[in-house]
Amino acid sequence: MHEFTPLTGALGGALIGLAAALLLALNGRIAGISGIVGGLLPPRAGDALWRLLFVLGLALGALLVRLYSGAPLAVPVESSTFTLVLGGLLVGFGTRLGSGCTSGHGICGLARLSPRSLVAVLTFMASAMLTVFALRHALGGGS
Amino acid sequence: MNLAALAVGVLFGLGLAISGMLNPAKVLGFLDIAGPWDPTLAVVMAAGLGVNAIAYRLTMRRASPVLAVAFQVPARRDIDVRLVLGSVLFGVGWALAGICPGPALASLGAGAWEGGGAFEPRILIFVAAMLAGMGLFAFFEQAGSPARR
Image (cartoon, rainbow over all chains, first blue to last red):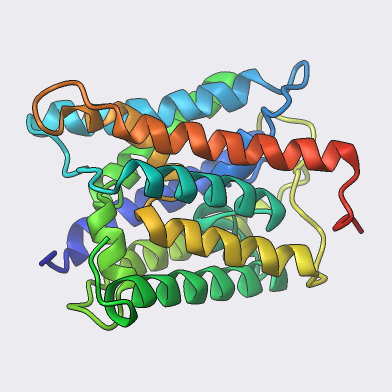
């Protein structure tokens, strides 16, 4: 249903990698989204503004692509409200307990050859693939 | 330093949007290895990882970052229960909606509300639940959870 798009994938991925590289080189910080946002809960004096601005930048970057392309990005959120709430809770809690998400462990941790990040990436990839398999194939129904 | 964070955030958001990773269906197409598999997410990660891995080696030759006092890089190398359990839970949540933290927040600026023509802030539900999950973790941490080591 969805086509393999290696060129835009590689270009976008390279930009993400460049962003992660720059955040470390300039500010000395790891570009892990869950860590950056989690550090705001609760916010600490002198440590909150850069986190908020980074998140604002994320949305602005996507908005720029949205404006340039002139058409809505393909971001249909088709999941039910229950799925969104449960998924969001698990993503929020899980990434904090596991010290990172796709960006922090995947793009940053693996680049540092961190054994913790390798275990984390293999674990969440396997857990996500098994869950999708269970929902789409084993249980037979579409979500 | 704050301006750098904003600029880097924009770059990150551009990358996410261009790569197609703001589309949950595309992410789920990667995770669904038994379906018509879409390997795009693997390409995105490989490209990001490749660029960052090279840059990391160059950056770490410096004594300190350009705009800050010191590098704040995790030093732990031990594998513990929290790392694995947290990653399992994250994987399940990621698979449920096809959304992880970066795309969730970037989607707030991508016009996710335009689905169906009317104002439909579906992504906000996910972002709110995600923040609640993070807040819950912070609460348990502060309360001194039994999982603490």
